[in-house]
Image 1: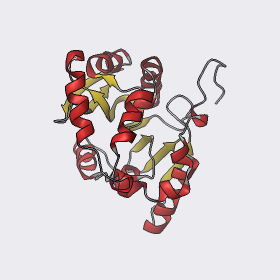
Image 2: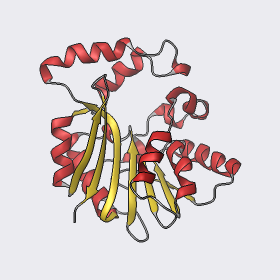
Image 3: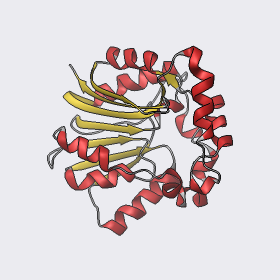
Length: 234
């Protein structure tokens, strides 16, 4: 898909660690993600064997592979070729054949086929600044059918600006001691400095302007992670 010259090159900013085979091999343990809650929610929202689910920022495929038995098709999109290689290995080992692995990002993925029924994304959108987040959400809306579901989980600050120091320090205190057990304090500090975690009161209007009705919102106790269930309205 040809993009204007003023678009960022998502594939050139994957992050060195996501191109490191050794890092990717240990990613599932580091992330410690359990997809059961989201799979159950997607099923409750109607996900079934006639549907297509697009997982944007799929990583090693934790959600994509867990949801695949419920779907007709899963499109797993990630900018890292190493992540996609790991995803394919896991799919082959599990005997899952309905997951299409596509290298791309929020802004560059060229979706093909009938409009998707569900889009899922976890802890990936915050890599984009707010300007690009807004464009990414418009693109997500464009690949969903009317009434389709967006399940978005991400790092989102749900505290007031004046509370930033308190909640960020509390989050950093919960960091893992070793990088193989989770994200360490230095890694989280780097994310805060260099990535684009936004506030809920900025993200939610973006979702609405992109054509989504926010049906459900949850903020975890740290006030750093949020989850949204959205329905495309038009």
